[in-house]
Image (cartoon, rainbow, N blue to C red):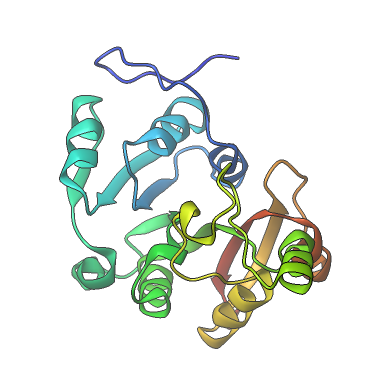
Length: 212
């Protein structure tokens, strides 16, 4: 396996599984906005393996600095407040990779991204997973997902939503789930929602506006 590198020569130590899952839904040449892009791992992957043109929005200055050092186009900004400056349909794709559950205003951000981009791709921890349900039933405690630390506060998610919760939010915003997959699994459509909500710890949704 090869790892993407930036112009500064620094290789990423590993590719996040949700980044790999997201990349399969990005087409060659797509103009992509990565919201909450961190140190730019996903942007670099999409450029090197999908031929995408990428832009990033990141709230932490340290993350912006790391992206810029790798030659990536990133600006500092807060998705909860700064998205209205972007024009309608400015991007082919907008991405939230494990970011939506950390936002103060997830509905606002989702609505803005659906305005800014033709497709919105969201990866998230699924708290409808059977392990979470079993833990709640047997211990009365919410476990963490995607972390070796079992404590509920250790995985970074401020909002513990399930796949069905996110699907309801999408519907409320007039968005269709045009594709979905468990991270590490095969793409499916919205008909797989019940199965994914039970069996997948991490999920990717591809969302688009209802057809007119």
